[in-house]
Amino acid sequence: MNVSTQIGEFETEVERSAIADVVQDWRIITWEGSMGLNEVALGMRVPYYWCELMARTCGQRAAEDLLLSATMPTSTDLRQLQLVDEIVEKPEDLLPAGVEKLQRWLKFPSEGYVPTKNHMRGDFAKRWRDGIEWEGKEVWKAINDPQTVATLGQVIKRLSGAGKSKL
Image (cartoon, rainbow, N blue to C red; front, side):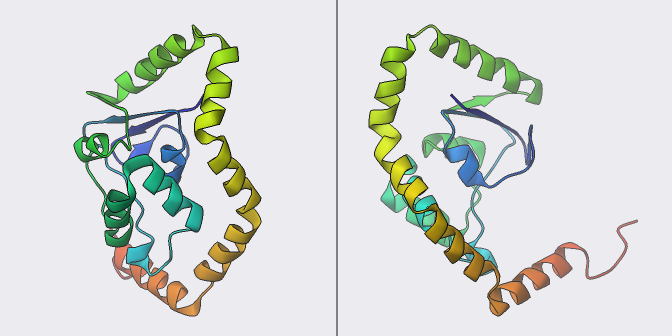
């Protein structure tokens, strides 16, 4: 069982893609939080299985809108889209909320929980696992495309203040 928590723009673990949050069993965010995939805005394609996972999670039309517009929905919108399961008031409420959910799950015998979860996610997980090498090659080609590299360079330059000191 996996639980993801996010504090505003910063996660409690290392930063990672929003797709890592979508594959979690229970996703918790604070009211100030937001997340999304900005690949399209950066001139990159969203990986194939990420697209499928988003469509499975929030529906085909909502996934298309989110992915093609590079939207970063607020916590309230994420909850409505079923991309997060719970919103807590303060960052310090994240871990207790996750522990509470895990404790409720742990009361169930794994003989029922695990096979049921596998029925719901197993086929997709297997397809993704079997396609991981292909998808990795596609992502590698995309992030090494000269136009993508140039676009990312422009974004980094803009975010860094074009070489100006932030002090």
